[in-house]
Image 1 (cartoon, helix red, strand yellow):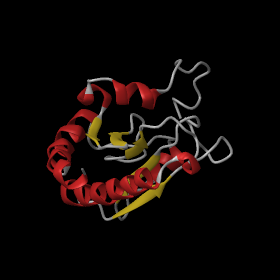
Image 2 (cartoon, rainbow, N blue to C red):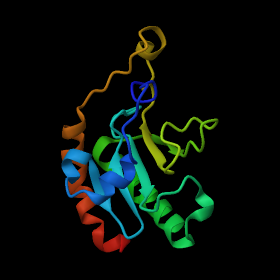
Image 3 (cartoon, rainbow, N blue to C red):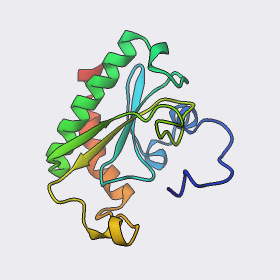
Image 4 (spheres, rainbow, N blue to C red):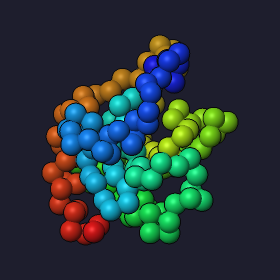
Length: 157
């Protein structure tokens, strides 16, 4: 909500910038594929909240090639396996918020959310305190996940 409610957002596209920079740990980029990349959400709904984003700057799935769409699904599948193994995720929410009406915080560059879930992971904090408790920091989670994403390079390409 902090990002969405900002009056003035940064110029440019955050996904295009992160994909072109060589600062993966700072940018929370876990994996770079041929057509898409995996990064952690800076404002996660849950620990391990990932985004799978095509390199192509577009707001629509219709402009993405079959190869890109297939890679996105493969990255989602592999990422779920990693999150099950490393964070013991018990389930997932996977999808995209497309357009302002669809709830997209960054509508100009399509991206897919992969949110790990656990039985009982919603408690009184979001309901009463408007606060979501994260049990692990972003950099700690990045360091836990990154070695597993390094292992999939040969499988994805």
